[in-house]
Image 1: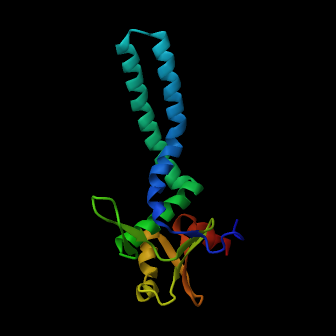
Image 2 (image 1 turned 30 degrees about the vertical axis):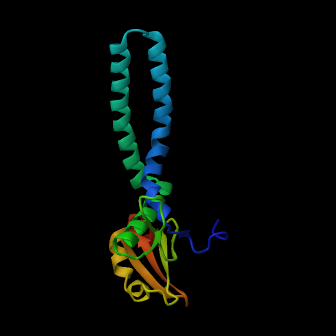
Image 3 (image 1 turned 180 degrees about the horizontal axis):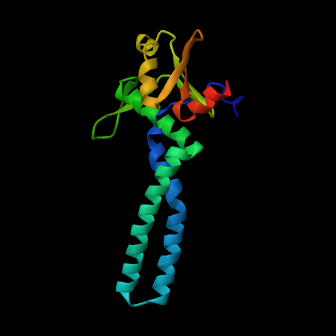
Length: 187
């Protein structure tokens, strides 16, 4: 996989959908079970709508609580979920700090709308480290990208290890704090 995408995940505007998609991944088994339980209650207690509605409501409350707890656990402990969370954090950081281009698109009779396009930014993640690469090739954010390392250190809750200038890109390497003890003990 690293040979296909040597720079890592490219941050795009679609990354704003990461959190809703992660919730859907966690909630999918519960929704299948809810359909099965609802169908079973419907056939068993046909005409007794208070029992069917009450049983469904109790299941929905319990499953909502379980979905929330499992989701929080996956976000903090699950490796795949943690990677997606960091991608979302970098997307949100780019949007909130104004690192994007806007383009007006002609719409229908209601008017036009703006399309947001992000510069080439890549996030590569390993088990113990991660690196963020920013394109420098004379774009309007070049000066700000050169000074962004400490802000990302705070945003990711990581420790910056290295800053590499690779010609067209600047790469910041970070040690993930959750695995910092293993990294220090390993060397």
